[in-house]
Image (tube, rainbow, N blue to C red; front, top):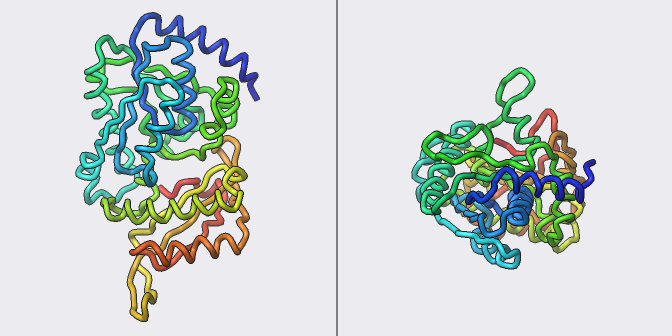
Length: 316
C-alpha cells in the first residue's frame, strides 16, 4: 500500500511541472477514479482545469443530474453534456460486447473532443485510468481481455496530450489518495462503475427501453443494499439485464414472456480478483420481489455467485 499523503504531495508537484500554465480538460464519470484525478489536478493548477461530464445514456437512474449536483461542493468547473441520443443511435443493433465498448469509447472521445475544442488553450486530456484498466486492456501475451475507453491513447484529431496521474495505482490505493485529499466518504465509498456504463450490463443490443428497465432494477437493488446497511460492506454491486433471453412467467393471472435480471455483488480490493458476496437470503428475496413487482419487462431474478477469475466482474 502506498503512502497516500506522500503520493499526493509528489503527484501535485509533478503535475505542476508537467502541465505548467496549460489548460486541462478531464472527463468526469462520477466515480472515485475520475474524481480523485480531478482533485489532484485542481490542487496543482486550479482553474486551468475544466471537467466535462458526458451522459452517454448508459448511466444509473438519475445519475447525470445527481453527479452534477455533488460536484458543486468540490469547487470544480464542470460542464454536463447530454449526448445519450447519439450513443443510442450508434449502438443500435450492435450485440458484440467488444464492438459495443469500442463504439462507446469512440463516441465518448468524439463528444469530448467537440467540447474540448471549445475550451481555448486546452492542451491536455486528463483521465482516471488506474492500473487494472491497463492490465485488462493488454495481458502478458499482448491479447486484449476487454478494451477500456480511457486506455490506448487518443485519436490524432483530438490534438491533446494525455495526463493519467493514477495509472500506477489499484482501486484501494486510489481511495486512500482520495481520503488524503479530504474527499467526503460519499465519493470515496462509491462503488466502481464501468466506463461503458450499463452498456456492458445489457446482454445483446442496447435500446433506450432496455436501459430504462435496467436502471429501474439496478436502482431497487442499490437502494435496498443501502437500507439494509450492506452497501458500504460491498466493493461493487449492480444488476445485469439478460435481454437476449426470455423466460415464461405469470403476472396478474396472465402468462408473461419477459427478461431475467441477474444481480452481482463482489468483494475485492484491486479489481484483479473478486469473490461473490454472501447476501442474506431475506435481502435477496426483498430485492427480487420488488424488482419483479415494480419493473415491467422483468419476470425473473437470479444471483451471480461466480468468482473472478474465471468470471469477470462485469458480464461483458
